[in-house]
Image (tube, rainbow, N blue to C red):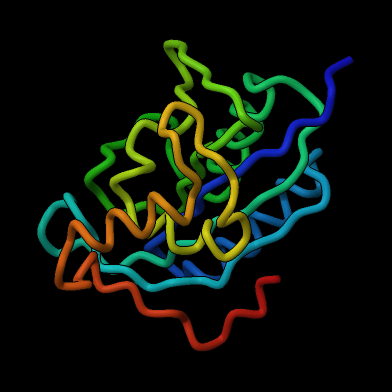
Length: 176
């Protein structure tokens, strides 16, 4: 039996009704083993690094506790992605019904062929850091020497203009 681990998951979607999909996928994760779930506000963001014409995304972050190993959580996230219509093979530059990324696994670093945690691009993605900071601003990110808020603030300073993908808080959150 594994000790419970605090985890952070990034959620994004941009097809059909993305806000509803994110909320429903988060609930599905809870029905399948995540505990003490907290979901950030939802944010509408411009697609970054995607093919031209890709619709805006809705993004959020969630924190929870997981009583299992990282491979088990990855398998659950992938199962929920498929449940909500995401094909097993997909181009990361295209629109998608749902995207679930394990961002943080306690205070640990994980490096393997199928999963790298902290997420390798966490410190480059304000569309992840802003919602995650709502829930866990003081969570120390392994390997960085700082916490989530510190990463967010550094990236905001680096951007200079504040134009970091067009994040806009969604009006109707109802996600907590």
